[in-house]
Length: 333
Image (cartoon, rainbow, N blue to C red; front, side):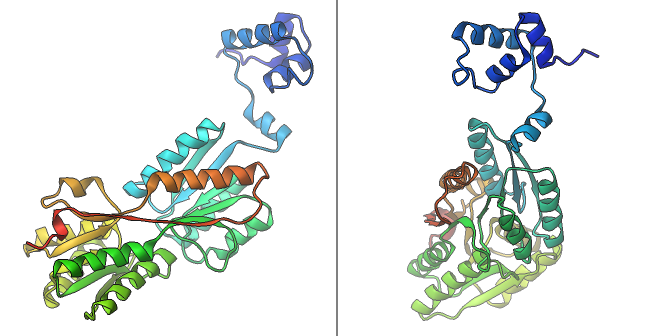
């Protein structure tokens, strides 16, 4: 095995002190008045021999790991995977690395993962919180660990968050159905007290009240199998003779599409909250309430970096507008 190159090896090869090499590698050459020619000679040699710093030793010395923990609901969901990709790219540009994992909305798993990341001394957290983790987040904040929530927030916990305007997005989608002339408009959601799901329900209800229409609501259990969910959706749509359905998540909409195909019934007009790569390919193309993914990622990073640099002056709670992308699936024919 090739011997690991140490700072002392570099110093010996160049005939300079270990301290001088250390200052140069830690960007302190100007501060310590080390000449540009010597700095260049050291850096050129470091590149030539492929020296890699000992990150553990560096983190022990600085108290920083330059690692951020990203804990999200489901990395396979395009909404979360796209945000994760943007966050990873942006923090890399600032000298940080990301470690991330999915919780599948499991409270105990979320707590376990936060504990594991904290044991690894990540510098900060970006989290889509599951229900029941208020105390866990509060403990991080009390320990002065930077935390930014996104997609949903915890009303009982005072910390930074970035979310989309779920209420307005759902309201606009339901208004669109009504303006198209649909009469029996349903909402498919989840049994959940998370803020984003409550807001999407409230937006739907507000629009239905405004148009003086009866509400039809179906909530699916988080732990139900896909087969059972398809059965429930089939019954909900057919028994209520719905001519339009708003799905509160993209994966619920996909389950609805599968249900229609499996049970061979005509799907009503539909809108999905959150886009998906399949939706443009479907015939007809699916209308969606689209969250501003790039802006969400930008704001998360801006807030977290200020906190990591000790420059955050107050808690930031941002709500960003959604866009209703109208495609064929919601147009009255």
